[in-house]
Length: 117
Length: 107
Image 1: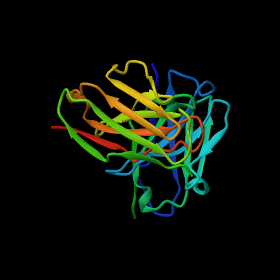
Image 2 (image 1 turned 180 degrees about the vertical axis):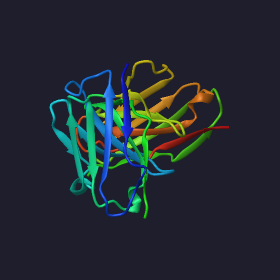
Image 3 (image 1 turned 90 degrees about the vertical axis):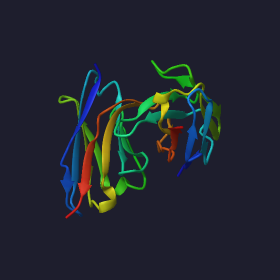
Image 4 (image 1 turned 135 degrees about the vertical axis):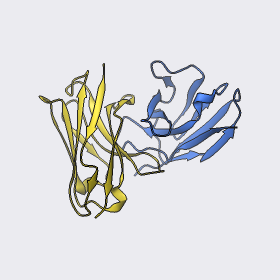
């Protein structure tokens, strides 16, 4: 069955770079896209970035200068890097299987990232 | 950049009631809207795509409507398990912006 699992450091120091991995199973990254979405504690959802089945990428324009999304199809992994972290980047980070035609239908459980010294 | 505005921010209703919540886009998004349900501590679940298409397995009490800039999610005969946050999202074109959400509470 379709599964996505996020992994990464729980705590990151301010100004450092965050690296998150989304490991998927049950589908191919060459057939579906994957999006990253975050949710600060007690707040709403924010779309961050997406990588599509053909390898093209989209970014939230407010975060674009700090973001990089890539994939390793041989490992069924999608990688998200965000640099210059600040405390306001503290959030639950989700990855989700995505299509431009219907949105995101399968989600990981999320990984909590805290930015603190 | 496109802004998705949801209203109301919260609502409190009784089991069996009918509820309607709104999502307004700052520009024409045609019918390119999805709706999600999120319960506390859980990941979002896709309910509706292309404004009015129910995703696989979603109960038929959930109905989406609208086009252009104004969209509505209606829940007929609300059940206790429908207490959650509901989010709209623009799809098909970047940026895939979410609305701020509507909190549905049961009395």
